[in-house]
Image 1 (cartoon, rainbow, N blue to C red):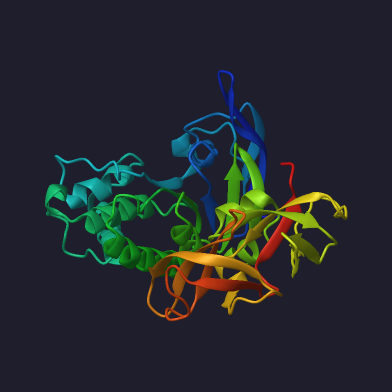
Image 2 (cartoon, rainbow, N blue to C red):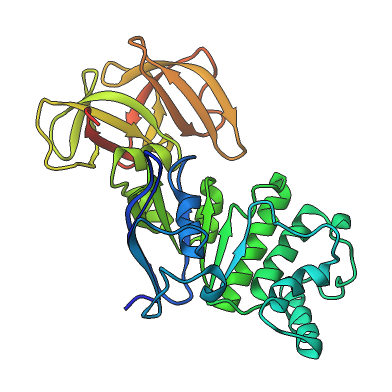
Length: 349
């Protein structure tokens, strides 16, 4: 039996279904990232887990115990909110102590637990600092310490890094990942940022309109997307029309390319398809009659790799990864398929 299990969770807000029959399970000590665009049901799922919302159907079971009807305080889940929800009139120590005091912890035990929680997040000695005097990263760690102090069975984090600038975000993400894994705590992280999900989650649940599109590791979602939505949402991909030939080949314009069939069902030869091509799934080559030709319309330099925008005479657009010196803007190039990173789906849906 899984440590944390969500079964058939459904939540409606008036006529809008925010979560639609969602089922997920986590092992003890696992970190699950809930990823998806705005309106996909991520935060509502987290609120159902925390007990801030009641499901219209489905259950939340923790270590064999049904938690669905329990109030938030009875669940003993730690929560880190998107905007931290710190009390500006209290110092760091009082903020961390707040959740403990509500559980009846007092005196020396309270001081010990506050000190332990701040030590965990590398803020030992910050007890008397006003929270307004802290950086964004430090405030995030205070919020994390407050959630960890009551020794929760599950840690829930709602967009915990969204208020940080890019450099601080990357460093804090590394620190958070190391801390959560060091503690061995079961955690659910909500994010709309792929890098956060890839870095923090042992597995990723990609949601769309309240439903689960795919559950797996970052590698699995990237390399073997279950649906066209997953292929388009995860990583980068150029989308172009194609003609299905088989489960291994498709025709793009008049050229046959190797592909990975993504379904659903078996491919229908001759039917229209929807090809999603990763930038590394294509190569720039010399223009030749045996290759699809295009013109380089742009180049984005990222260091060891550059991303070239290439447009064919018929208007197909591709983004192709390559050596920064591989081509210049305005140059006519050939486009080759490498045999990996090209995912084909039926045109409809």
